[in-house]
Amino acid sequence: MPGSRWSGHPRFLLAFRLLAALLASMPFLFLVSNIAAQSLGPDPGQEVTELLGLAAFQLLIATLCMTPLKRWTGWSGWIRIRRMLGLFAFFYATLHVLAFLQFILGWTDLWVTFTKRPYIVAGALSFLMLIPLALTSTQGMMKRLGRSWKQLHKLVYPSIVVAWVHFIWQARSDVGEMVFYGLAILVLLAVRWKWAGSRGMIPFVRG
Amino acid sequence: MFIKKRPSWALSQSEITPESVYLNRRQFMSGSVAVAAGLSIPGLLPAAELPVQGKSLNFVPMPDYSTAEEKTPFKDVAQYNNFYEFGTGKGDPARYAEEMTVDPWSLGVEGECEQPGEYALEDLLKPHEYQERVYRLRCVEAWSMVIPWIGVPLADILKRLQPTSRAKYVYFETLHDPDQMRGQRSLFSTIDWPYQEGLRMDEAMNELSFLAVGLYGKTLPKQNGAPIRLVVPWKYGFKSIKSIVKIRFQEERPETTWEMIAPQEYGFYANVNPEVDHPRWSQKRERRLPSGLLSPNWMETVKFNGYGEQVAHLYKDMDLRKFF
Ligand code: HEM
Image (cartoon, rainbow over all chains, first blue to last red; front, top):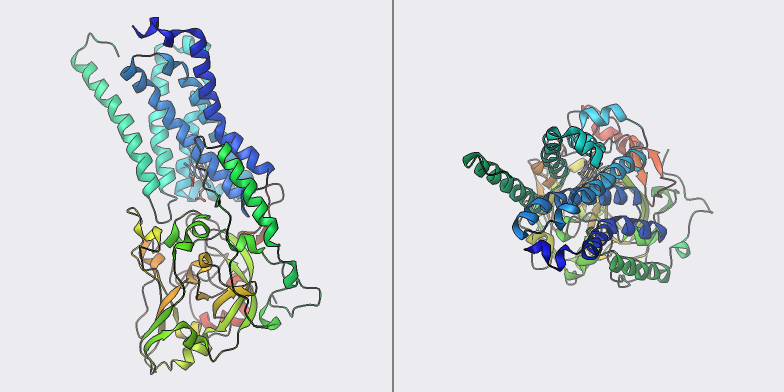
């Protein structure tokens, strides 16, 4: 039983969570150190915006990896860091949007930008869906919402798909990176679809 | 209005950022990249040092064709590039363009002209005196630079090739060699290499159109389109094709790379025009580089990038919303 081995030890779990937090903070530390060193190149506003967007996207994908990892390894430690990763994703997404408004837009042309530019509309949709998830991420909210908490948090799937659309719509010519992330998302969604399918067929098994 | 005589206080050659300063910055940068090799992609800028590049050139400054605006420092001009032959990141060209051989170099001249043939670069340039022109460069992505180019007016070279009366357009092509250009090896690129561009004959013959072989007094860094590139300062940067290997005079309008990929976004003319938005970026303003985080260097974009006096007549009877 995994739970009875060292992997279930509270100290090990704590170390694991700290390590995850450190990894998830890397993009932020990277940004701060480069801003301090003024080494973001001649167009730092654009760089900061792109870095934050990518960090949000990657962390969202990481968040979606946790449940499959738990199922495949049988170790519940993965689930213990899932909320933290999701909140990190939201943290980066929020900074990404603020960076865009401040550095790229300068708070002008808001209406045209958010109505006429499809890739921005996609980004905004993705962000809007993340907001209720972040707000209901606490233990208290989880208890209070009960079954509907799970329903609500399925919003993460459309959110990540729309974020991917946001990503590929800004590709100028080379879509290699987007295809790579797209495949990762596809696998993560397919896994859930398969689980849902098997649940449907064997009604007594709860997933 | 925007081309001013160079005043006596204009920046001189000696005020270019010394190489040692930016090399130190590079070293600092590679340190912080190593620290933060986490989830993000530490590929913003080349982590390695940039080799000192360029042979000094003799040239005549052309104050009448130069803006007195503050120049973008060499380190930015040479390290912040769109040259997708070497990758789509802004730092990729500086990192990978070393893999391209630019000497020897030859250009094929074809089509409607009296002097077709394969020209060694030196032979094409030999009769001409180099000029220095400080032009604004406006990228379609809403950033801009001010760059002191060294080169020859395009018209001077085209005239020597003696276009015939059937030559209505000039077509240009960039080197296509996946062995030297890693971006051309990418499986997921939507660009149908080689990169190609074109100008209407009267645009090509305009006094502003320029073939650059250098910048900041020295031969072009490879990432800036060595050994020879076009500079058409009133059009978005992608018209200014780099590392040219072919010039063709033709009667029909050439197809151009970006137009072929996304005709609703990039037109053949691609004149800088704040009144016509790109679907993804507003073209009303631009960030003049280098820009800062706390003090972003925003400015209003001017029609024809401020060169209307020289070029507006070329488009007198055209609807520039349609022919964008
Ligand atoms: C109101 C919401 C949003 C706005 C206005 C916005 C805006 C932008 C802008 C302007 C860029 C740079 C585009 C370019 O110049 O090429 C960008 C890039 C990006 N954004 Fe967003 N975004 C939003 C939400 C999001 C969200 C929620 C995510 C992910 C969860 C996201 C992920 C990305 C990614 C992955 C990139 C590409 C970064 C790269 O080039 O490496 N964005 N976004």
